[in-house]
Image 1 (cartoon, rainbow, N blue to C red):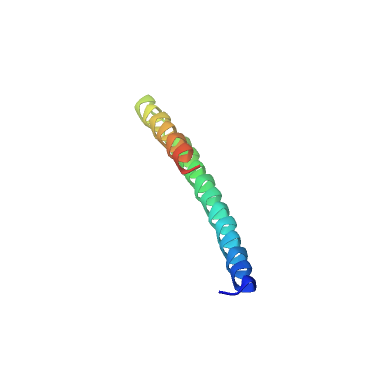
Image 2: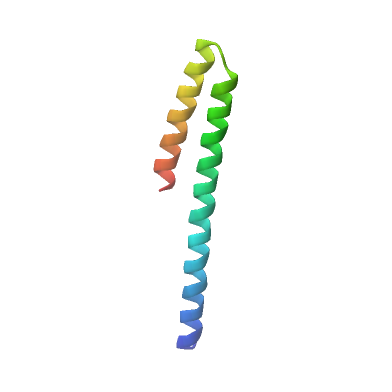
Length: 66
């Protein structure tokens, strides 16, 4: 394989990795928004407790993704 082709492929891979990182960040933000919306709609203590557990799960998943 020519050196130029390797460089080109490397640039494509880097671009795709950046796009994946942006998408992961968008997914994280959307999940947080969803949790906030659920929190705004919930009025009982039990549901708020469930929201806190969901948020903890989300944070742990984000750590694993990073």
